[in-house]
Length: 115
Image (cartoon, rainbow, N blue to C red; front, side, top):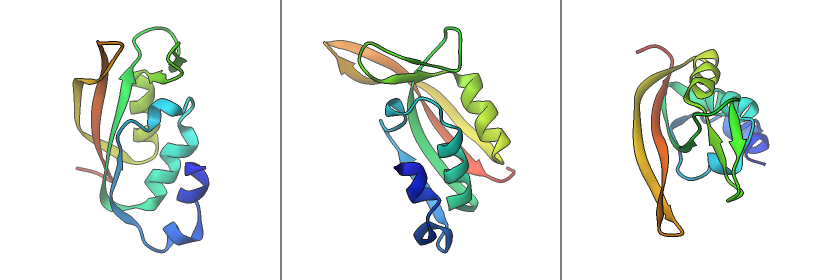
């Protein structure tokens, strides 16, 4: 799994400057382990750029009929800030078309450590 890879010996000795996860987190529900893994695998000042489908309803995330997950912004902020990450930008965006309709989401850019 992605979490296993980020926690492995190959990653621990060579922290990343940039982790990019475009259209990846939509296939993960709970992100606690993944966020912790990215934070540990990133060098101080390293960046994490990712996209998520937006979730404005109750709960931290929701599995949609499409088979993809949507995540609440507050959930992401709580996890990332708890892992020592600082937000640099959060933008609303249409991520893709599904059945001819735009799928609304967010693009996030975070830095490990303070600003």
